[in-house]
Image (tube, rainbow, N blue to C red):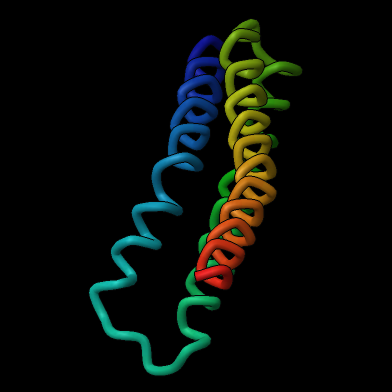
Length: 111
């Protein structure tokens, strides 16, 4: 069954990379059309979040299958690590962007 091991390892790597690449690219490409209302941007952000979650879920399943059923443990751990770093970076960016937004509001309010 070495063919299945290779397929699982490659699929894990591909979906881990796709989690980083596809949602931001899709979000940027969505600005080719003008939004119809003010909530369109909110919908785009929610869509980006859902797409990233779906790709992460697929990567997690593939990584676990790779770890359990193959001898390609490196690719399973790499997939899990990639997804963990992605969501850690996302969770870290939220308080940073909130802090910067508050700082800009305070600076513009004082002028």
